[in-house]
Image (cartoon, rainbow, N blue to C red; front, side, top):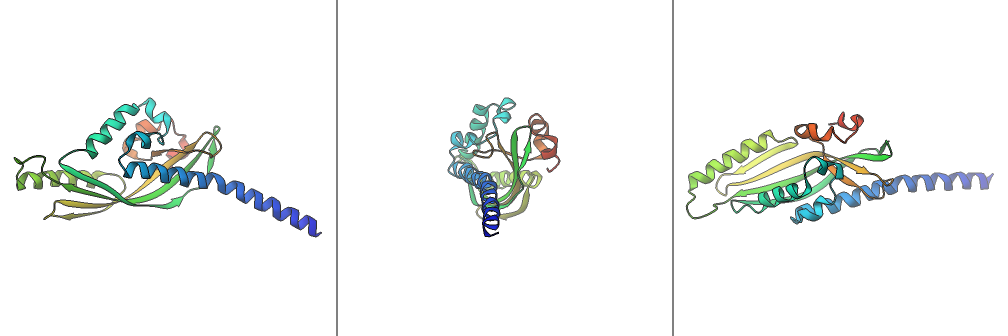
Amino acid sequence: MKKIILSFLMICYTTLLFAQAPKDHLRRDFKTYIEFTQSNDFKQAMEYVVDDFFKVVPKAQMIKQFEQVFNDPGLEIKLENPKVLKVGSLEKIDKKHYAIITHSNLLKVRVRPKDDSETEEDLKQKAALLKASFAKQAGVQDIQYDEKKHAFKVKVVEKICGVSDDNGAHWKFVKLDKDILFILEQFLPKAILEQI
């Protein structure tokens, strides 16, 4: 009887251990993706974006857009305090594994003059445009603005879909955003899209 119980416990332990491995890999790869993004290494960050996304939007174009925004002399941008709030259950659909991650971060943006010709009024106008843009963004929870420093602190909570085509050993990611649903519909299953 002891052997049967011990065998059962070993099977349960092995099953639990195997079930945790894909989620551990998911967290590991997501952490790496976020670290590359935080350090402005967009070429490496794009290696962690779902390949099918680049069939619609070329990878080189994405890298260029990120570099233009983050290297704009009129803006200082930092991503801070990334936190995984929730990792959803793994779903196997058509030979791929999917999991939805809910995460948050703090986006810090400071408007600064591009050159000596920009006035205080110019900075206020740029800040007002940025604030309006943030207000329209999906996932924005809170916008704080320091008028004296022309600086924003924006709390963002987003859903990201992790996709693995090798049984959860390696993961790539794409933001689940209604504004790009027309792109996501081209490669994500309906069961995932319904969770946006």
